[in-house]
Length: 182
Image (cartoon, rainbow, N blue to C red):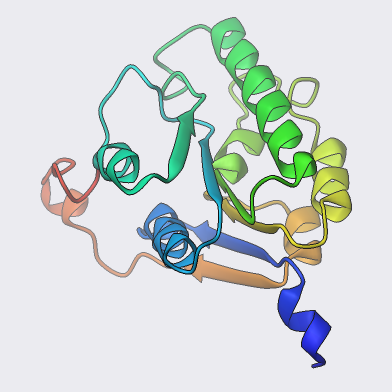
């Protein structure tokens, strides 16, 4: 590894069925901010209509977080979700390619690409996502989270971590916990 490799933006993917994908990405956001880096988090599924602990603390820390989603796929119509995904991708792509940020976290992008309840390929084209990853400014670190990472994204990533569920309190009937899940 030469010194210039240390300054190259990396592509980090956190995927799998286990907990911790977003949590890992948000930890990187805190670490990067602590080192004086500019960080943007774009959430593809979470809606600004709900309150999330990470958004509360990131506002306090000065880490920019933008929630472009409208919630789970069964909560709104397919057309509402398609419109939200179209806008989320337009915004995320613009921010990634603009080079203003040192790190851009595309939270739950993998989930969005894997939606099969309605078509998404025309509003969130995989080939455009791959091209954006490949053609981003050289200093930009990209962090992509969500289940079911596409093979095309895994192939161009510098790091892929698959979170594996071994045991989960959901299986015991314990619902989402304030401060742990949201």
